[in-house]
Length: 146
View 1: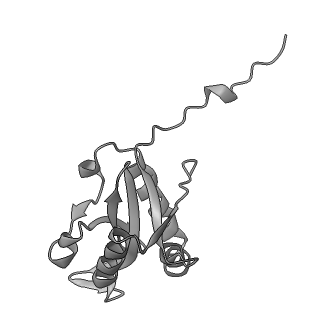
View 2: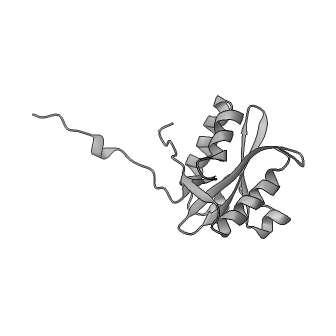
View 3: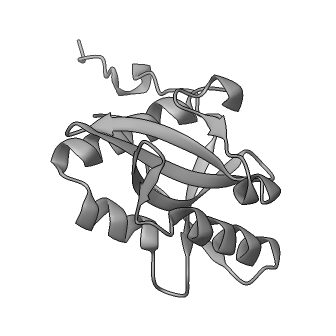
């Protein structure tokens, strides 16, 4: 008797959303932030946030999701929150057609202070560049196995 292969029985998650990084030519500021500014626990938290968010059909039910106010609101910018290393991290983004979420800026947030301090202005500039077809995106791979 042959051994049965269970590879076809692996359950893969239903993914409703795809995530993309804002890029400027070959420069990917989201990936730079992930590598340079996040510790290992921070990178794990970031991946977990995207992994869980991608599997949640209604974006209003995303953990840590909120629309921003002021100038960012004019550009339809939202934020996702995650916590790692005792810090409150934020990822600022916009939606595109086809259930695409584009990540514009990664930052740290404490009280009313963002680090980097120009995070909101940068997100607005990048959202405007996307709207005017001057900015690009690159698909982000999410590791669902960790």
